[in-house]
Image (cartoon, rainbow, N blue to C red; front, side, top):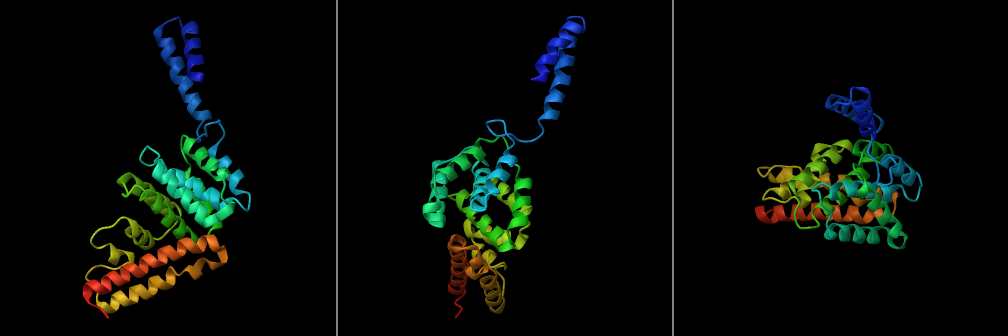
Length: 251
């Protein structure tokens, strides 16, 4: 707004010439950027203020966190796909049952319509509220959104990696979860946090450690909705171990 006002003033007060227009436009642009430094929602409010307002309600904090991060992954490749939305709706229906409503989808839309999602602020808030096991659970869910169309794109992987860093998730845990979705010939080994040349004893030890680390009981105190996702992740670890055992002829 100021760039146009000052451009007009520059024209009239600096000799009615082109230089005055340019000078006013540049100064006005600087002012516009200075007074609007933070990302805005479609209705002009600050999107992080909206996040805090929604997450401040004890029964809405976790769904709001999920919707904010979901929107960031959906927006990663510059388009939002119906298959991704269907995945989110299915996940929420399974996790929250009758508590899931159109209000949650409205929250998601609000984040999708935002010019920018302040991941550093949102993830910082999540770090204060949620223990590491739950944050890893969030990452697992977000990979599910990225894989909903059958492929995790590089740009989606970059956003997921950024979120993982901001959530202070150890690199080994990120690689483990990534390889549950971003598959290659060595993914089963990387799910367990080992290399293909690992010995039989190292494989068994890695499985035992991962089974303990990712056991659903780790989030049992968080409620049934957390347990369902944890069981899915735990099952992928077991599947990776069984695949390795079969390929190596282990007993």
